[in-house]
Image (cartoon, rainbow, N blue to C red):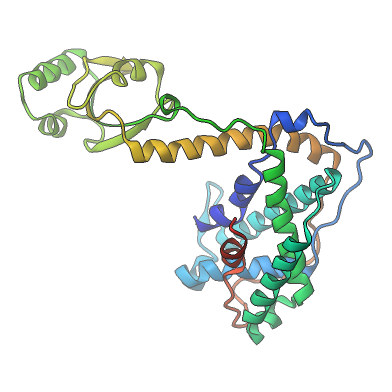
Length: 321
């Protein structure tokens, strides 16, 4: 869902932060726990309007009462919860930046001011009425958002993000999955005799028959040992994995594009793991409360004609994040 890319996953994209080498630099941790406040109603409504309008544009107002998750929570409740989590994490990261004595440059502040002017100037009367936001509110949110991004860059600058081809390798295969070893051996013999593997898969496989991409460490050791040694066109001997017998054909033994994408994904995961080691310790000492009656009273259905959606997009276009 788009929210996961722009709200909660904002935390994954910018809070993918801080490596062990940054930790060794000795970020100060305040020993006395003191709850920190969150954001004003107007600042909160700016983010709520941006994300709610994004979903409204695609799904219309029918989306708000759609149940999501195992507990059937209404989508409006779910979305507001995600936004609240985002704001808590954004504020926490700014506290961490403050403790780390991270300062924005005059050039950055000038860029953020120009960005704020541009975004605020794009708001309609309906947007302003719904959010109650001022230009200073817009600037404050962009400043916190950018500071969090800068913090990530600073705390991860010494983290080794080099991912080898072997570690990230992605291959393309076809699988035939059966419950009987004798059947699997018969399939293997037929494939060796030249029978079309796709036809065999359609006839025998108890699971999917199409081509799939498989990356290193995504499957069991038994699967990797049998499959990752294959070259283009080769078919494995039958092997057992999680109670099923597999015969696998290697369609492509190195998917270069998928491998590069996986390298980037693994680098992100490495950053995130490193960041969590310092963030979790920090947040325990700096609890942030995102409270207020707005969370109980705001209605995403009644938006007074607000249409703004591009708060984050403008930032990405302007600041290159």
